[in-house]
Length: 224
Ligand code: B1M
Image 1 (cartoon, protein in one colour):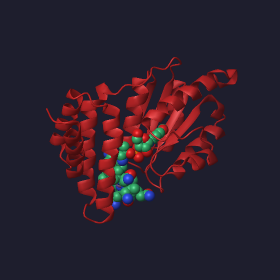
Image 2 (cartoon, rainbow, N blue to C red):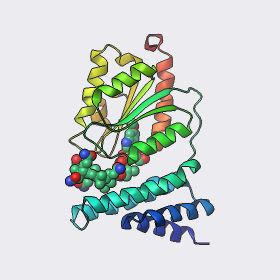
Image 3 (cartoon, rainbow, N blue to C red):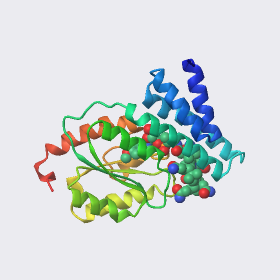
């Protein structure tokens, strides 16, 4: 059997090379060797995507190569998903989740979905490039407690503020907690646009969501 180091190196290389078959194979090896599935994806998958990003910035890689690497990471995530564990919530809730309009980077959002679902939240996944009004519409329809938005580009971040303003204009901002995340989204910026929190990664999103839902349920005026 391969060593931990060989598995991690093989996994990172497969993603950098954009090799879906090898990425899935190393993911299976990792499970057999009892490596932590979440750490493998977020830490080592993240490291691999940073290498891809450096290659993109140096113009060694172009969009098609980046896409192959994203597909390889997704192939590994598919294998690892059933093995990702999160502490179960004692206060279940509905979470409307999506990547904002104009943005198709959905790997991080998918990890957030996996972790929130594993914790027992009912995640309504709107996907990527989501028209902004859809967040409000879906939250209302499903009487959601939480809305989560992801954005990976500085050009799409402002859409998050527009969505938060829509909830305020509709008079329902107090009915939901709103979390935002993604590479360029800082905590300071998140709070400045009126979001309730900015979990730094998918695992942190679980704890943050639990706390926010518990707070929301203490406020009787938050019922839809
Ligand atoms: Co593009 N891309 N991309 N890209 N891409 C970036 C984001 C970029 C930083 C690369 C660069 O220029 N250095 C840059 C944005 C620059 C900027 O705005 N500042 C960029 C660009 C410019 C573009 C295009 C415009 C390129 C072009 O066409 N010329 C284009 C835009 C398309 C569009 O969206 N309209 C484009 C396209 C693509 C691909 C399609 C090829 C592919 C995406 C495939 C896919 O997602 N299905 C892609 C990729 C893969 C990247 C990089 C290399 C990697 C992103 C990634 O998946 N990271 C990226 C560079 C980078 O980020 N360093 C880049 C791994 C992932 C696990 O991390 O998503 O950050 P992340 O999620 C983390 C946390 O952020 C957090 O949890 C996750 C970890 O647990 N998190 C949340 C995320 N969402 C959260 C929500 C939460 C809480 C936590 O609560 C709701």
